[in-house]
Length: 467
Image 1 (cartoon, one colour):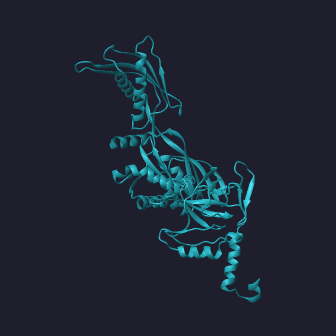
Image 2 (cartoon, one colour):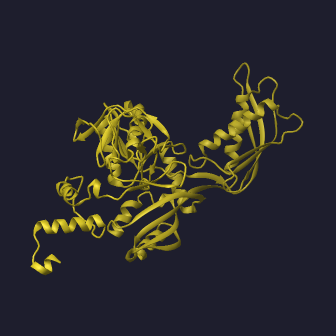
Image 3 (spheres, one colour):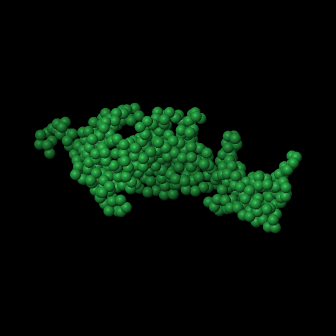
């Protein structure tokens, strides 16, 4: 109206209008910059100061009463009960764990206890202070809108609600993004092996979207993040904060081995080298089980052909052989083994001898049962702008994938499909390239399927080469 009446607007008029539009949600500011290169940071801070809502401009914060669906709200007023939310955790190698929180309502003095409504516990904090860069400034009484940090909250994590115990409330938190980029990690220095787990655990407290785990099948430590930059920043922080340097490798695919046929085979172990010898003789039936059934062992010995005390040793030998793998060093699954016959020597037989005999028999018999490799198949969801649908489906098909369906997500398309895990280990940069950074995806392992024959040969050959 002022522009139509006077024909011009001052800088102050423009700022006031922009601020009202942003607060009302009618305008969404967009700025260009690079956090890594520290470009645009000052512009972002100025924009937050000039245009973003202050605490008193906000609507009451909505939440729920603990243990119920009853809706609660807290107005940004000092007279309201104290409430706040933890938005970040910092693992400091010297100061320990620092918890950063934002006050939504009420006041908090520096000598108060914290009631964690999310975990229903009370914690006694250390010092409460403001963070100004690396400087810690003691905080007096906190009011709505204040952002402060506190030390020594052992159980509190990012996303928890801290509030007045007599007026508890739990605020909804933003779920962390699904981590989809994985690397196998190992320390550059063997002396740092003991520091890896403790250092990563400290970083996990800071970043809920980061995952660190041990794959028992491939015997690798796996680091998973939201994207490549996320991984790179994590590795840099690990070096800067804890002095641990890491090597990144593409993780191995957790293949499994199984069989499609059956056989009856002897496993016999005999050793004589002066004095007491070693003797064990076993006959086993090996047959496949339905997918996902694991392993089954059956004792079908009759007439005492093998004493009962030795039968667990036979099973143990078979289980150990299955864990080591026969084709490509991958665990064996979905197999039934029946111990049907055998013989023993009253002096030379032992548990160790029968364990070795069981292992020998299984390894020989496995290769006679049409052995094959299984690979993990993942359910994948890919969200992209409509114009990239054809390119993404074509790329998915080239990765031995199959499209199961498509849904609309606003202006975007959501492609649902299945694809071998081996084909998407490097999918994040590929998707970024195809969609110019406008696509995202998530996946989870669904089931295992047989690897095509031509690929099995390559996988087995690569395994033998590693040995």
